[in-house]
Length: 106
Image (cartoon, rainbow, N blue to C red; front, side):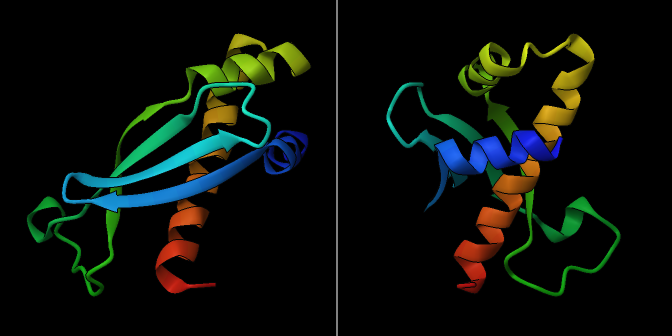
């Protein structure tokens, strides 16, 4: 799936926004060909896990709308049904990396 990640990095820009409702990572096509895809996050609460939360910036994925992005990828790579979970995993990993960069300033 490295070719998918490379394609996404060449054609999409992940942009993180934060509001009182949560955190969103938008995948904007660099030329505006597709609608924005988004991965929604919320800050984790201490009662959600028995593991201690040491950092105030812990978050969990609550939803995602990546239909246009996956349809666009499908037009280039003719994805099979079994490839969709791997593609979603790549998108989520890129969104998490964008959040880490946003909060850590890397």
